[in-house]
Length: 225
Image (cartoon, rainbow, N blue to C red; front, side):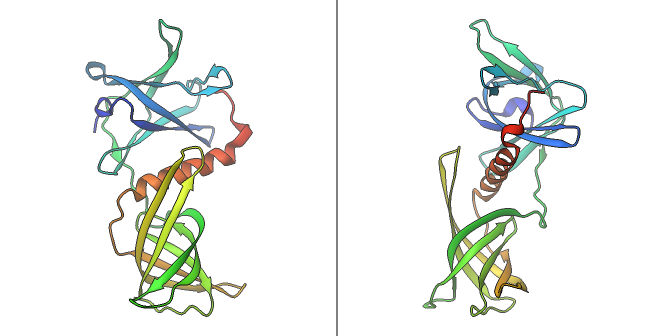
């Protein structure tokens, strides 16, 4: 995918790496300039001042999710902060390179920490549980020790979440085969499960959940680059 194939109005994530520190910002495509492999996007502000992402050691990547829910990563994008004739600011992002599919590895886990109910088989009682973490290929739930499953059992949980700042609600049915069992010191049990179904929109949820986590971690430490 080429960067000029992004659509006006599409949300993008700006992944900033500087001196081994990572920052994540949200922007939105305003228009494209295909002949110059360039897009223009909304400026990010700190207070009343737009942030510039140019400087020694600064590397900017752009992450975008397409209609097929595949995250595309544009690496080392050239960028410039521009001021339009009407006084508003925007970014010009340019790259000749095609995107690469942003592949969340199986061992990458995004922390969730949401209460749910876990079910096994038809007409079986539901048990309280917590979805501890999730990836594009699996999830882990924490249960009381009296909830017993064995490897290979197919379990069902519902992930119901609303991420602050985005105002978007997410509701997923997750079906997973138990692949790992871990007993914790507090008497709880962790069941690691491999997803048994293709969950539409899950990658986009993980991306925003992780972005929100990074934003909260950075907090007031965000500085103009």
